Length: 287
Image 1: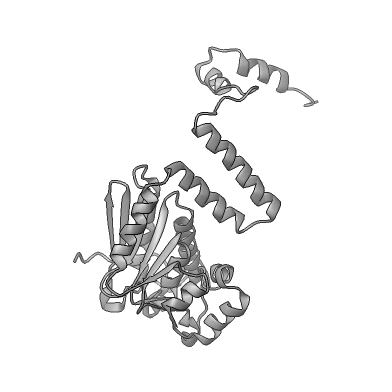
Image 2: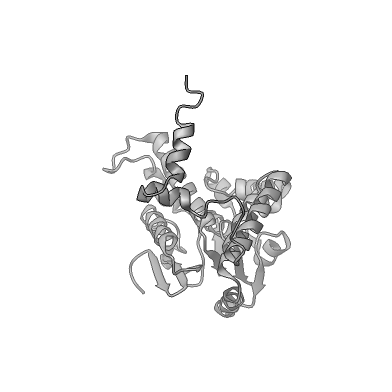
């Protein structure tokens, strides 16, 4: 397998990101995390890719941030320890951006978990739309035993899935939990027999490929927003999405809409609609 710590394969509508440091259980080094962010940006920019699978090389998913490198999180770009706590905060913010980018992709994302998904590895799964794991998979947030705390979702996102009482249990004790418990606690979707992970992912992809792509994008967006806001705002997202669905399915004409004339008049300078509006509005109540 390639020596690169991140492998990106983009083939037609599917992208696969493989975490590739199996000798250290795919621990996220700083280089690996930077490359992971680069890979996510490439997936984000693609208009062909509709689905992303994240997996680990070897028999494990990801053991989290590489703790052996944390003493260098405060180093500057020249490797000098001059940034201190601010450097650590900058590194954590980069990881938060990484998780946010993953969560907000307009692709459907799947974590395929074998072995362990702890610390940063678990935080990756929480930013994905689906999580499928093997029976032998384990998960947890063991940062407490290294005297550190989670930085990019191990408390905040986790609490939104399993609640305050259980998020305290996971973080304060640091135990590793069986994969089935993640399903029982609504953290992951499904547990499959060891050796069937790839087949289950492919079956899920087959079902997702049968769906309307635009509807998937819209549903993902409003699901993410609706779970994080008040009821009336969430209903507003659903209403606007319904209108967009109607438009893209052919019901696009709306009485009183410009049908793009305002933009084309401005761009072509050939129509009067934009000029007439600006003439009336430009100096209105500006005295």
